[in-house]
Length: 289
Image (tube, rainbow, N blue to C red; front, side, top):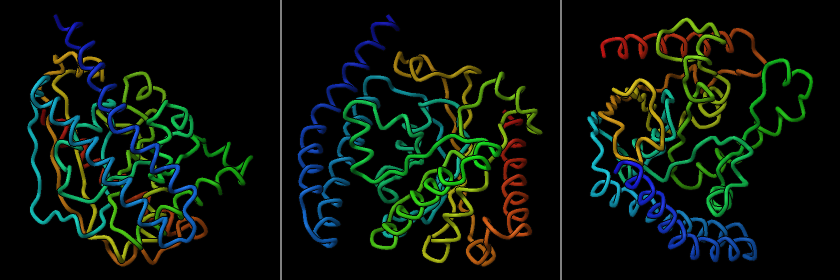
């Protein structure tokens, strides 16, 4: 029965993507052909509206068909009129829909940092490109040192997103561990946390440096699954179990948007120490489960 539920869920997800994919593809073509920055921005707002409706339709059928066991705590003061930086640990593709359940239409249209290979996902990859999601390369410190021009392209992708955020409010979501948590990855990293991987400060520092004085705050998200090995397929089959989401709003301090993470060693160390401390707090909260 659970397998059948999963197959139906996949069909529903595909159907909603096709329903909203057609107008999205049409507006993407319009955006490519539209002259002038002002008019392209207007078309982007239409594409945003289409994407929000796609998200809303998926949340509707998931709520009634899958009936996920969500225990969500949200802080006061969320607004769609201001931009936000959302930081979260990462366990499964399900995380994205849990975040949508909690924050859909409570904060602006989300933007995720995506792995570059995801641009080739049919329809959805093009949608992410049209929505101007930043596509990033997964590179180690050694690879960035050998190929600084590729690392610079990632920085430029973030800069373009931040430039857009000055023109319209967006919510920037960042899974700062860079990948989903698994025991194998945890052991390979030798991470100093029981339930988390090592966080990366670079993307967070760049966003705060470019936009810190314009964002309403940082939304710190902690996700816990009762299932020790969560998966998106398990979620689509309706047997993922209870999912807990705890959130709090952190203020953006002056040093965060006045620092220089890329070129100043002390600023880089301060950012990394800040996010390490944040991750230790998150690890303690997860230990209580």
